Image (cartoon, helix red, strand yellow):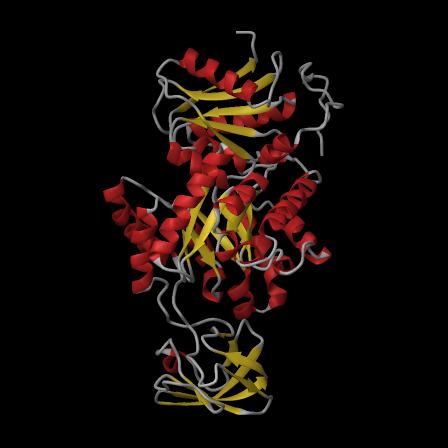
Length: 507
């Protein structure tokens, strides 16, 4: 919704309603919602990856549930090469596997269970058959009791626990179907004691830091302690490489959404992933949409990032166009205010990885046109104790009322850009930094376009560089107004203390 300027707030002459439509490149740059794409066999060539980044991928997800350490190192190198070919940076997110709460293997690879069948989950069983199957998660018999519902293969199969004897769980099949090797197990309502970080995860963290991952996603955290431990391990693993990653908590356990727990996890993390697959199995499909909205709202209020994930464009694994339901799903996540939407198998193993990204980008752009901007009410009853945060909010307010072309935030850490990105505004935020690590991390921030800026200790030189950079990108023309934030003295993280309204090219 475009706000009408009041009598006391005339728009600069640069603001014209009937401007020429943006180019394809400009449209990509002004898309607020970011795209996280998982890469795998379908997208591990330089040609495909370059096309995906060109189509709008902002963050590449490496799924550590599959592949070797060397596979991920090679793919990370490929991502950097493809990004360089596109003339932009992308972030890399290492997604840890987490605990393997799965059944074992079957003699014939799979069985078919029918309602009413007796079936045994046996932690001592080496090879499964029609009567029983082994468990990768050996402690499951200790975690369940009579009456518990166990959901296998993402909830497609439901077993009712009758009794537990030693390492055997005796169950009756309530909903049957085909059960194959290594399918996942969830307990309805959560409550499994498996730790969030396994020995494999700890090794994978070392690999992630060696390849320079910008984000580490932690699977199945139950509480803030899990995230604090993951951050400590990541910081230690990153020290030899002089590298720090940001932490994303994947919310997929029932325990993680309990009142107070989610808030604590948010405080201990840099962002969350609304991991709708496993979460839906534990809490029920019907509960997930409302939880998604709650999580995104809480994250924005806490100045944290959100990624909405799982089955967003699932049909495009095999089809060249999404379903209407998928289009609506992606659009609603955008309207909820998510920072990013994510693909999984669609781009990792699907037939149409590039088309998936193109379709997702188009949906995001269209949905963003309907966003309602309410900055005036956003700031009601808010107080800002920090100077840099106050400057960030002042920049938003000024840009909103004047209808300027862009906000330019000269930043080192990206904190100013993060605070700005928590509020809806139809003015793009260009975060300019000499810090390559910050530039990559900001690729996940909603409505923020990170740009490289040469390091300078001279304020006037830096401002001139910022103007020229926006001009070269085609963002502004000479005579346009921009709102600019900067810190003086230059080069101090967290030192943003100046807000300027600048007419480009008239200095």
